Amino acid sequence: MARKRKPNLFISNTNKVLILLIFAILLALEYVYLTRMQTSGEPASFTPAFDLSSEKCQLSMVQSDGWFCDPDSDWKRRKAIHYAQDQRNHVSDERYLFFQNNWEPTVHCAFERRIGKFGDGGKWICDIHRFKESTDPSVLVYSFGSNDDFSFEIAVKKNLPEAEIHTFDMGLYECPTDICTYHRARIGNGRDGRSQSLQMIMEKLGHEQRQIHILKVDIEGSEYDLFEELFRRSRKRRKPIPYIRQILFEIHLGNEYDPEAVQRIHRLFKLFRANNYAIFHKEPNLFSADSCFEYGMIRLNPTFFGP
Image (cartoon, rainbow, N blue to C red; front, side):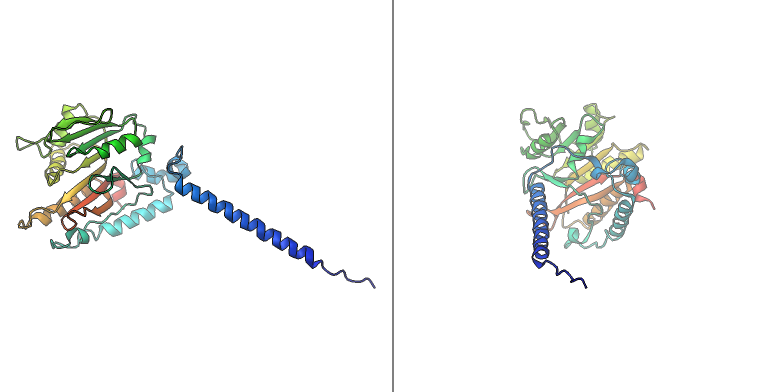
């Protein structure tokens, strides 16, 4: 009768040790890779839309006017989240903690970035890298309100070297060399004889047929006149408003003795919504957090807001 061969425990244990060692090495390599990815800054080249082919994200490309490229299932989930939040954005008419109780973001930008300095003056932009991949050869940026601080413009130019940037304010300021073009102007509704509306400025600069890729607005309360005139004039003349991809603005609660101040804010945000804008960013201005907030809006296709 043949004797059974005893297993070589030494070899078996050695194999186990080798397997564990290989596994540990692989984990270490993965950790190093992920760490470098997180600390290396922007990649040298970006693959649009998360490396998805246009066939896999056709719905999102259409409904975002070519901005987002999500798989259909993710995009439908994104729409559902937008709809759920949008339904409860007008919650309170109380002035106390108004912005804390109303008008929250309904759209998420995976690569949202703060452009410009920290604190007052910088703005959050939705996925700024996508402007580099735009079919439009020249990115057009309007910056309303400067107070002689051009950190936003400098940061935009650093990220988008080909951008054409125009800055507007009432002061006697001057743009840094090769960064922007400065225009002395009072921004408003253009109907009071002192201010200029957005449409008036676009006509003066010959930009009527161009898209504004980024509109930054920080004009200390005149944002109401600016936006109300923008939407009113377009509606009155029955023509579309200028196509502005992103609007980054500071909004102020207004006179505490004016009972209409709160309702004016509600009407303004509903105007944005009616003109195909969704909120992607919101934060308090800590200098006056109870009455001053920063918002970021992105324009989407009307079909995004439908069923």
